[in-house]
Image (cartoon, rainbow, N blue to C red; front, side):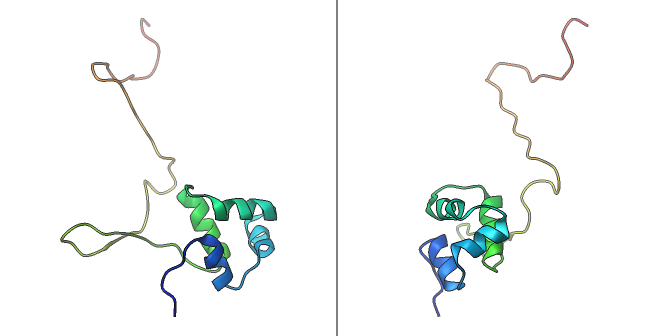
Length: 101
């Protein structure tokens, strides 16, 4: 039994699915499935949806030095969009509202 695949195309083939079946499950057109299979960088949500469409379940595992592997069950706060805040050194964070009011 094979424990590694080279990419999403091979994963789909091992699952015995056609691109048209994946497209139907994802509610997209077949050329979009082909594009997903060729991508080298994608959102985890896209990868998860694709894996579920082939009948699998995506698991994320982190391997840290000198520690057992850790499985990540959830990224971010459940149901909340990710919050990314960046600011230049020496500037204050905006507190909302208008200045001078």
